[in-house]
Amino acid sequence: MGANSNKGINDLARVIDSRIRMHTESPLVMDFGTVRKNGSLRTNTFPKTIAKNDYSVLEGFTYGGKDTRVLVAWVNEEAVVIGKVSGT
Image (cartoon, rainbow, N blue to C red; front, side, top):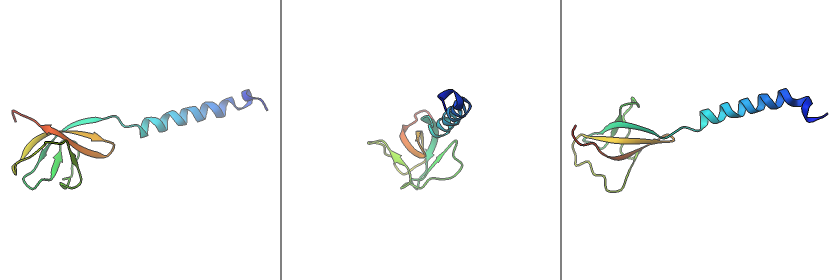
């Protein structure tokens, strides 16, 4: 059997491979959120509160014990607080 006899199968495999890649390679997503008084995080696009031990922050970020508007990057499935948003 030559390579041409499996052309349909090869085309199907390429389509499936590209679809899987589209679903598994998630781009970096930026979001706004609020770090609450208790240290938990609530973002605009994720409807549940994230406990303070379940997200990361860039070095130097402090929230000072009051609600603080922040910029959040979603890396894979983890929220990372980039910094405070001023003027809010």
